Image (cartoon, rainbow, N blue to C red; front, side):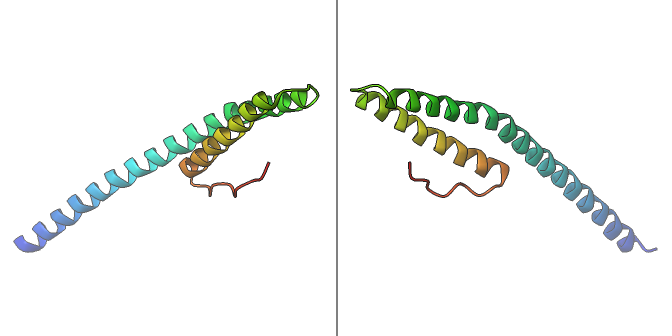
Length: 99
């Protein structure tokens, strides 16, 4: 093996090693995003559930228009959170749902 072949082989190994390090970093970042998005889904779902319960209980009460508007705001914000979590995890965001 000549001198130039040895240098080419060494450069190939260095390039491959750098590529492997970058690939591992990407995989680690993807795993972190997947784990974070998974950990956020339950609390966001709980917020949505509580908002549904509040909405149902307030529908029985007269003169709760302002409170119902606040609950609709909660639904909107929770929907935005769900979209962000979906993007984090690589899922597609939800379609606009009409309430």
